[in-house]
Length: 332
Image (cartoon, rainbow, N blue to C red; front, top):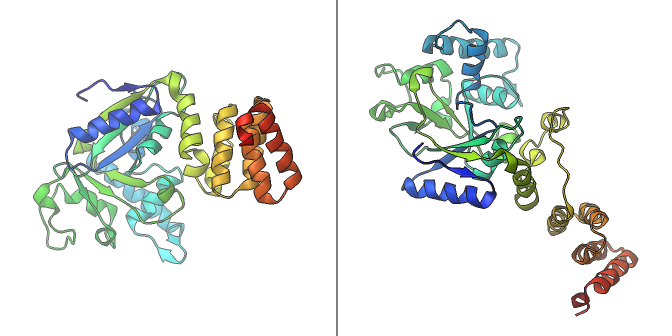
């Protein structure tokens, strides 16, 4: 990391992202947010092996390959490798396992800088968060694997490809010319989380070394406010990023941070719901804004419009009248 990048709000964060983009001309950026800045950017499989084998000085490539092969084999034996009658290839299966909590060779990244910021702002005692930024267009380090490439290829074969001499039965042609250290893969719509999180995966062997990432530190004291703004202004929250039953259940876990919004944040949430045509939800949020700030003319006015759209004209008249009483400009 060539620069000490520390931020305390979304504006500063996006400025640093723009600075990194300018530093890497013709780049394609990918981001990973982690709630504790001291954590390394490594796969969950590598972390699991380190915890399970504390006497192991380092996680070797052969051990890493064996672990991932074993994980896939166990999954297939239990017939967990099919989705809608389609048998998943190794990478597809690993992606599904990864998004349901299994430790795999894949490392989650996103193409959306604000999604990574959300993950970096999760609570971890008083630790600062961190966003890793990499340039996946740098072919000295990364190479894309496509859906065609992964078909009928084992994860072991793909991972070993970069450290072996070219063999004629390898269908992924041309990659050894660049000799990259990591693969990146943009998966198809395997589950609801992948498009919601703008997901991509990076993966390589433990011997692949560093990602060559730039790092942005998120100050711990600013995390809660950033999360509120991400939800209110950008619709980025746990519910939108994990739009499935497992995700909803996880949102309600005992250690999940329960955020309460202030009057302005409820107001903006209500306005956004109204713009989406969700008038009942809009009224709920605007009512909460008014409960927190009794003389909130803008909230009365917006709620009056929502009632009007629903055809509840008596309530609309009451709210619009109250808005005019509080702020005469609304009479015009």
